[in-house]
Image 1: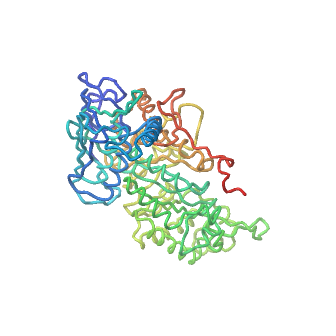
Image 2 (image 1 turned 135 degrees about the vertical axis):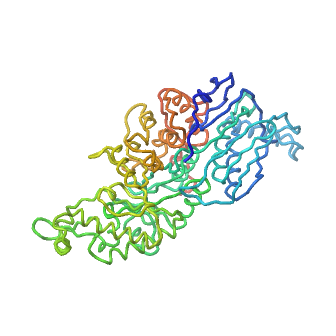
Length: 566
């Protein structure tokens, strides 16, 4: 992991028109803050009609599609400009029905643009997206051509995002102009795992919401979508091997499911933006919806009278058929999701149902477990880990698997999410002392909301703030912001997350000494306005304020579409 370059002497503030050393100013801020910036006060103009993006190193479909996206982002057009152009085109069409040599609103002469191109130099054809992917880049902005240099295409994507944030669009009442200050940036992430957990079981989220999340992840330089795709409440993942999982377990087996094609689309959509998709299939708990279609894999619960209650809970750990089921499901998951890691959960297992079941009690006695049902949980999880090993899967686990003393392979990543009975700091120390890698999510549960400005609490968290040596600190590979879905659906998922999650994004990307909340508050306000311009309904993070372009939701009441009503 590269050591972060101190920023204090280089960049006192990225806020618009704030002094940046030696009298230089950076016209626009960047979120998350880059590792090293050398700004100038030299403005350069750009023109969409006379600006090109070109690949001068390794080119790929990923880069080509990114250029198409970022051209539209860089040359942002204000909504009123679009309306004005439409009116001009209509007027011109009436005056010149057969067309003109130059299009409306476009000069036939090239303007004097100081910056005419962005050259993208990708040095390697390695498009592997994983924990060890190099996302570093250098951006040099100087007339007449800016340059992004990166070892991988994914580093180039990060550089494109930074370039886009540096370009400022200005409206003078009749037209838009674009400018950027000459700048040099050397940048790389502090942590290799910068994740966001999305929960699609408590509430189904439409594909467009997942796409919006992925775009926001890329804007904030996150690189992992932790897809908590199924849970007790519903099973929207369509399994071809076990089709009744979604047929019986989804809220709606037709409209609220993720087909194989849907999953492939999301995986590719994310990959195009440098985001890994790590699915989670949590067990032995959190599996109630699995039993709607396949009740034999869950444990029948018994009442005090020794009779079945009709309730099912947790995986049935004493039957070989349970593990055959899990093997075939995980094999399909492996073949559907290309990432080498699978999150296998392992958290919050209640023993009440297991304790009530007479067959399980007999198994416990025969196995010599007595009444220690934690040993039964270990028995189950060990079998599941063996299945992952047999399928060639690496795995992420919730901290309980570590806490319960299971033997895991060295590539295991432990996600620390609890605050009691052990603090997250002590848990991080314990996990890394064992030689395992850790990611932190405990202080970043965004679903816990409160009135007012809460993102500084997330911003203040330091993942390495625990007792441990340098080797232990090096085993912390990052963290995750989590948005559990009990009270989140398609109506509020984006607004409740962004830009609050941006605070976590900067903590995981930027240098350790980037901690000035006052500076971040100014940049956060500007960043939220940029996100809104890109079409996302990002909520206000700081209090009363205004953006020069506000988010306008699309409202389509039933009476607006009456043509189909007989």
